[in-house]
Image 1: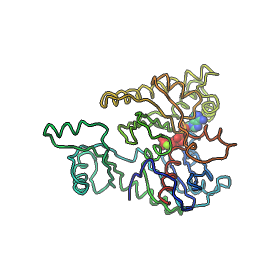
Image 2: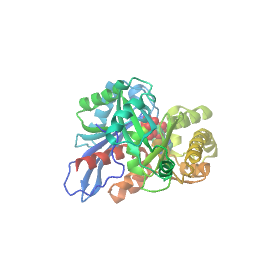
Image 3: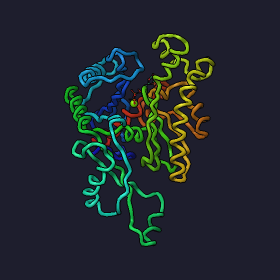
Image 4: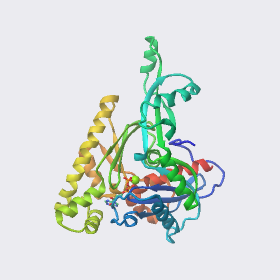
Length: 370
Ligand SMILES: Nc1ncnc2c1ncn2[C@@H]1O[C@H](COP(=O)(O)OP(=O)(O)OP(=O)(O)O)[C@@H](O)[C@H]1O
Ligand SMILES: [Mg+2]
């Protein structure tokens, strides 16, 4: 089984294919989307989300650690919801970035067959658990400059960079259990970063940073020409904003969550804006370090920041990010890759960032099907 599919597949096959689901089990909410292919286009059929907090005696918007049975229960509930009306079991699932290990290793430029034996041997050095406890996948990173050819000319051995990805067997079996118990027919499990890239990154030469604002953490990925160049997790997320609002204003978490979602940092409430900015400053500072690290290593500038995850729907966030990074910053618009009814376009744009992962997984499943 492959852990990551092609990022920019085309959807222009002729065959009519069945509807497919993309499933993203986040730490605070499950998101699903159902798509169908029509006239070479991915058509949105339905989508929905379910907060997991209440399944773990916590509030909406909070991340919770749930036993697998509870996740199965929640996903089943979501698929049963009348308004969502899921009609297929064919699915692609995303796996949390935190359950994966990813490293770029340098190897001699040998044949793919030789690489296949070298990678597991070499990967042992980077993976802190026995290699037979993980599922391993890898892909050679395409060259972006000609320095390597120069090296050959100087008599040095030619090298390739290989992206190695590992997922622990326990995670795989947990997902297999979820799939089995919810009656899904899963084509693949893919680390969420690959799903997100597919749904929000345009094919471009500009290095781009994706910021996924989840509940408990913010994930940062720097992508160049469809390849992940760097990744980092900041241990602060949107629930820290809620906690800061609740703490500073002395109000219940539920009320703080509502204020965050309804007013946000758009500026109509200066006190609220200040409380939110304080949390964001911490996240932006770490993101900036990551960004500068990339720029120094590769001598290229990140030209765009794409904001995804539920926390990216915060009003005023794009503006604050633009100032923090001194670069273009936009909310991801994964529904933009789909054919959708015009009358819900505005809603889809606003809730879009949250669905980046599940839409990416569904797009791959649609490609795989036809
Ligand atoms: N309109 C909004 N404005 C601000 N924050 C929001 C809004 N909608 C949702 N959020 C916040 O987004 C967070 C959830 O985002 P998301 O669903 O992407 O997280 P997750 O996928 O469960 O987390 P992770 O990816 O870290 O496991 C919650 O903390 C929630 O409060
Ligand atoms: Mg998430």
